[in-house]
Image (cartoon, rainbow, N blue to C red):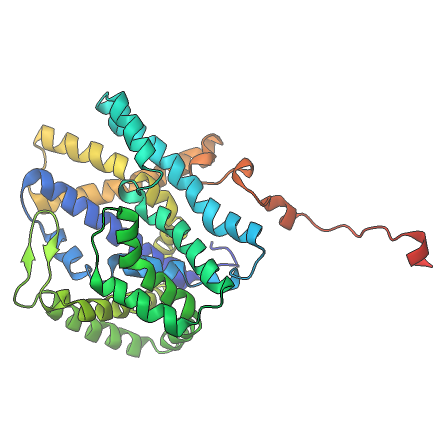
Amino acid sequence: MSSPNRMPWVDTAKGLSIILVVMMYSAYNTGEYTGGVGFLHYVIGFATPFRMPEFFLISGLFLSQVIDRPWRRYVDRRVIHYLYFYVLWALISIGLKIGLFSRDPAGMLHDLAMAVVQPYGVLWFIYMLAVFGIVIRLLREFRVPHWIVFPIAAALQMWAPKPDSYALEQFAAYFVFFYLGFVLAPLIFRLVAWTQARPALAVAGLLVWALVNGLLVYSPGYAMQPVGMQMGLAAWPPLHLTLAVAGAVALCVAGGFLSKFASMEWLRWLGEHSLVVYVAFTIPMSIFRGVMLASGLLTDTGMLSLAVLLVSVVSPVVLYFIVKRIGFGTFLFERPAWAHVDQPNAAKAPSKPMPRPAREAA
């Protein structure tokens, strides 16, 4: 069962998002080693405009509820929270990939040092959430109006600069979607509620959106490659930005529609625990793909990509349940008390009335 403080459709939409993210890495990682293109490449190609924008837009939806908290509490919830998991899993990933498998201590130390200023691997998303949280709070403190921020953020996304800094590159590419989630949250919540009450219209709207998105992505000029794709007309920056926002909102509507079905509870749960999958999926992905290629049991790029996707999603979930069962290793997926700068138990503990001084009681 979901927590009463959570919105099922938001978690369902996050579930769709995390599957698309893992699918992209599974397909492209497999294609890199097989040199081929499978059917999942075309599925993820359809989602190229909105796959990551949707994740950032959803992450910004509830920011308005915490943006005005005291700095210490805000930083604890919106910055330290993400940096804890980033640092922890960067250490784990770099330690396993370079320190253990490659046996390159010097390379491991180099990557660990660079991970401080350059987001590491797939963990860049968590790194950027912390950065976005700080930037929006500062914009709020200096009372910079939306009509100034949004055009600049949109221009950066369409410009798509490629500086030496990967953090700056990702900031330019995705800040606008996080900011839109923050600003348009009331409108998006109303839209999803409206479509949930009208499922036939929701499905019809999603079909129209899917048709338009697919036609623009796979219009003349598109090229599918083992790693990545070149879109057709959808690659034009203003249209790409439009499709990204439309696709992000469409996945919210789809989350609202699917959350009404009991059979989709697994997808809602996956979205609620999307961090579990996100931080841990690359390790089983690489191991399983390597074993399958070495054994020759699966050689078709499409089927191998699908198998890698399933293993990559399921393995972190299995690890999570094992950790919860044995009670050891919870720090992998839940931030411990020592990693807070604003102690979480203080807010949860029932407040006790303070005894009033005798002169006040009189």
